[in-house]
Image 1 (cartoon, rainbow, N blue to C red):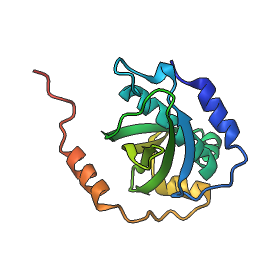
Image 2 (image 1 turned 90 degrees about the horizontal axis):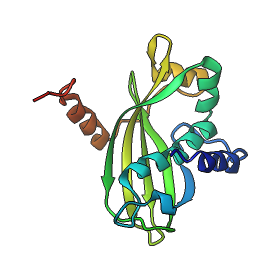
Image 3 (image 1 turned 135 degrees about the vertical axis):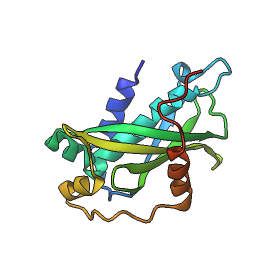
Length: 178
């Protein structure tokens, strides 16, 4: 089940937080609850992706993206993701989540999120490709930025993100069926 109550809590908690720039980092804290764990008594990998919404949506609100989406009747969709799991998150453990936009190109925005443990170690990290969508398909990020009243110039694409974009472009679509 989607964590609706937790999402509402995050939105209420940060409703008066200072506005963030388009590439600024939103920091939030989350608890691994009993319904978030798997058979190995750790945060379920699928639930990790759902919990990342709890950082990404407030980030969109704090940057002004959510208001622009609502005003223009646009949507926001995930168009790809790559996640790296490195440390177990146990039940009732509190993690710090960091969420930010890294850069964008002519079609997509690239965001990264990570969960950090109390000992300062990164438990997992995800790179997202996201698209703003309208009636006619994907809305160029430069147009989105202009509607937000911010500089449409993207920061430089980090090499590791550029390599992921290139590697993902070689992936067959639709997938082969054997």
